[in-house]
Length: 151
Image (tube, rainbow, N blue to C red; front, side, top):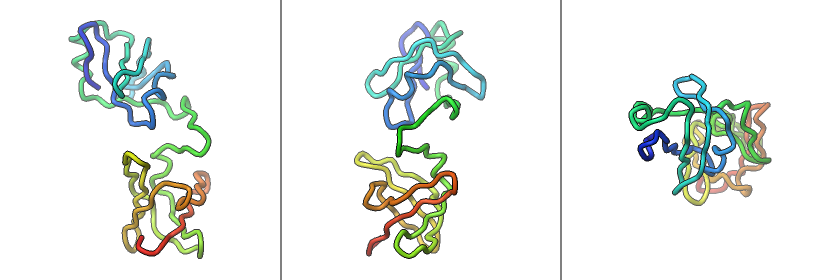
């Protein structure tokens, strides 16, 4: 978070596929305290938000650098999309032979696509595209990956 203008609006840097995702919420959480989101619009890749009770720049400055959160129950990802938090810790399985490769320990957000970091006997970087990510099962906590030579 940072300030935007002198009326108390704040600039939110989204950790999402698109800043538009955040404009559909009525409430965000700052330090686990719910704050009503009165208005939100996308501006230069960020979200400019008007928060209840934040009416001037002095109040907005106190929020600078804070991390805001949303309730997962309030968000519905599109079909085939997942929250990074749900992917971290999944067991990675070789789709061709069923061998366990390790666990998803990080997701790198790159301009072209995300990359899964699989840590096991060795670290494997797997592009998050359909050619390599064969199946993702959040409920059963695994992801099936097609491994190619050189991975």
